[in-house]
Structures are given as structure tokens and as C-alpha cells.
Image (tube, rainbow, N blue to C red; front, side, top):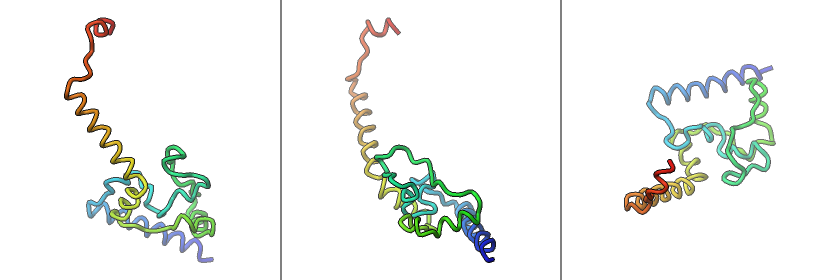
Length: 132
């Protein structure tokens, strides 16, 4: 009987969090897609999904209806996902724990490519330029 009230309360809490972050000018620096906005380990919501091995994350496959979603979130099956209400800093920390190494690797590659390009090592010969 209380399910509709609890679902509305949950929606209000997440709405208040969103509003407080907007008013406080807080936004995740890294978790811009909100991957960690609702679950500490959202990948547990998709059996067999492993970040960095399974491809691009398309989001939590959750029910749209507030009541169904609440029941889904508190189900035993989602215990490994660890539902939470993180701060923006906690969201970014969780994102960096999973994707930070890959981000640093991409930054190193970009810096190396920029350094090589600045040296002028990649020159286009006249033969190639004429065919363009």
C-alpha cells in the first residue's frame, strides 16, 4: 500500500539532489554521463558486463515506472550494484577508479602524438600532396 508513496519519495530525493547540484554549480568532472549517479557498481545490473572489456556502457536497463523501478532497485538481484546517492565527488571518484587508468593512457598517447607532430616527423611528400 505504501509503494506509491515510497516511489514518489525516492523520485523527490533524486530530484532534490539534481536541483541542489544545479543551484550549487556542482557537476561531475569525469562522470558526465551519470554512470555512477545511482549505483556504486552499475555494471552489476547487466549480467556478464565488464567495463573496458564488454564495449560501450549504454546505461542501466531499469524499468521506467517509478514503482517498478523502486522494486527493481531494492531487489536481491541488484545487491551487488549497491544502490547509493553519491555526492558529485564520490561519483567522480568511482568513475576514476574504473576508467582513470584508461584516461591517463589516452592523455599520454595524445601528448606523444602532439610531441611527434611538433617535431615535424610526419611530412607529406610532394607526390602525395599532388594526389589530394
